[in-house]
Image (tube, rainbow, N blue to C red; front, side, top):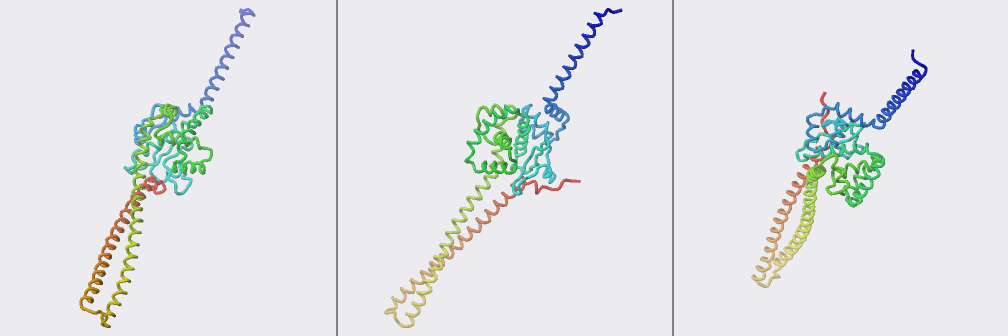
Length: 335
């Protein structure tokens, strides 16, 4: 039979173990709660089965393991149908949306125009950076925002950048730094060393900004060609107008002088045959010159029409390029 002292010691040990077990459970609970998002991401990452397209984008984006983890934890989907618009609201009618991160999932529009190779990869990294930003601690965000502000200040005179940030301010108020985090990371070729080191944890930034520059140049090239062609058209139009004014004035002057010449011939004003022949030859020469003016104008008009056609062809190509990234023009999803 155990002594009272032995029983008390056993009870104390059981109490101690029970207390330690409770503390351990509480500790595990607190750890799990404080890292809840990580465990959700881990589950999504491990249960996600990427499509061939997504796997290809991941490889071509040159994501690091951390970048791939963030990307796959959002279980990205590629969609080239109008169903994409259900997931990604375009906010404003005339704005094309290439991707979005919503309800903890990434959606990417399936742009197929070969001239825009790389646009899916840049979009994928842009959206992946939204996943990263959402998980950054408050302190780390504050430090990062200082660096992002410094880069944004360098871009404040860039019209396209200013218009884009104004769009986000209208459509996603309060998300300035979230968007800067993605835009600067994927589109700005040169940033501070601190930001370079930060982004390097997730992807090859030089590669991604290179892809962005390549496909963006396709839009810029057509825009530049159309602008140059428009300038030539306007200049030629002005030249034609001036030539037509001179032609009309010369015709009017010649008609008036022919009337005077015929009147003088009928009234016998000319004192000699040589004077008559000289005046007549002068009028014939002017008439020939006016014919040459007419031929020159016709040539200018032909050049003008050719330029108009070339300009329209460029506009058509530009429209096709923009239409290729417009999800509202995508086919309906198959049943």
